[in-house]
Length: 408
Image 1 (cartoon, rainbow, N blue to C red):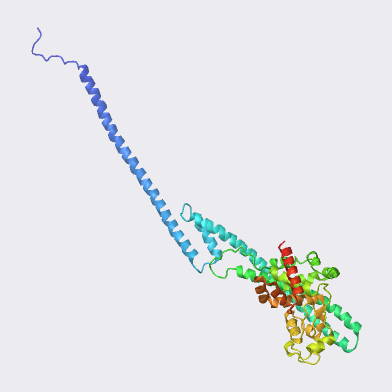
Image 2 (image 1 turned 90 degrees about the vertical axis):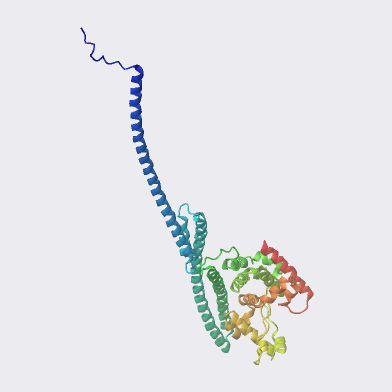
């Protein structure tokens, strides 16, 4: 018999209990996994935040460094002691600061300054070339004047020895020299204009000057204006008999306009118009000796203080240079002392055209005032003071014709 007191056999787990056990195990695993994931996520985000902070710190330092560098650049740019060349380099450096608020502005300033610096280099090159030309021309002009003075002494000796053939031979030589002097003096004047212009454009201070588009007086403009005075322009304004003399001598007029730095077309037109009125055939002009002796002898107002001055310094040239004082003044203006000793040379085209331009150059302020007022009668009277309505009218007509041609 079986003892009824023995333990009963274990019960089999029910399906519900098994399910609960399984879910409990899964839940425990999930909880453990979740805890591990949270630890990883926290570590990831901590590391990421640390990286972001490091990058931000670097970027912040970079911005700070750029700001300090930009401030240094700006301080130097605004410093009065900074040269234009250095300022250009500073603009370039500031324009290299990527994403800086002043980058675009600095680039614009750099481009403008770079163009200026390039112009400054060209300016210096032009100045150096003009200086070379001026020095060479001055040296040549000095040598020519010394040669002219030597020939003048020889002419005086030939006159003393009553050798007219020798005198004439020497005069031809001296006139050729006068023509060369006219060319060298013109070259000196044009070069001087270029040097003065380049000096005004050169930056002498620390601040960059504004680039100017104004033309004003330059060597090129003076030359260009004078070279408009051609035989084709002149022939219709003068008598038909003047044609060959225009062809032979017009370059002396061009060089005289350059020598006396005539840059105003109105002054050029006034010179030409007066020539057309006073010397329509462009022949050499000289007053009658006897008439001059009677009229000018002893005239202190003309500087005729020595016996014979009246006849010796009679009216010559296209505008009638008259009187010792005027010959002395003109010899200084033309840098030709020999003109006082040989005043008859004043009627030669090589000198007469230089004298004509020089006389009007001396009276530029009066002439300009008359032209500004469009008072062509007053402008005409600067050369021909007398009342002659017909000649004043001829001046006005010719003047307007020349102005139109020069503008064309």
